[in-house]
Length: 114
Length: 115
Image: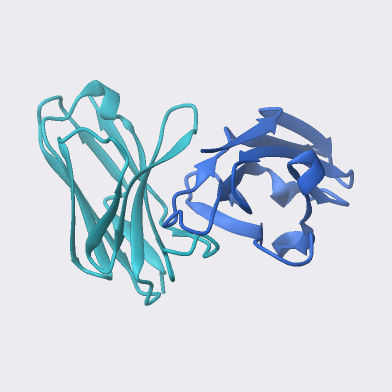
């Protein structure tokens, strides 16, 4: 069984400040980890993913995440927040034979203040 | 060109009615999905199809019946709609769906409201 916990349902950051969204996972098999972003009234868009190899992965819009197996974490960061980063962010986990079955976290809503 | 398109975008209907949501993808993917997002924005898989074959049926009531006429289309028919069916339904697709490392491409969702 797999599960994801996202710490903090709402995060408020100032424009230009660091964005840090926390994600911890549970998986009995090697995980594949994803971050998706959802803008209002839209579908989910892939930000980045970790499958194998380099544990620091870079995604779109300046986001990156680091897979830490010892901490079962996959936190998402962006050095400098932009107003356009205001959205809902979802962490998700799957595995090799999951047939696309993603277990999503509950989501974190990011508000960016001027 | 929209990669994963679903229609309608909004669907308002009364309890007991039957409704359908259509989905099409032009990405050449072999696997398609229906996900449900509830009022708290929690996302959960309902079904997945690989090359028109049902792979995942995640304990969804029998009132929900997916149909995949070809690998580019996956429709969702819902019978006898209930208040609890109100949600946003997302269609998605991926390449090589059997391998969980393929990212999903989502449509923009269908907001279903049952009154």
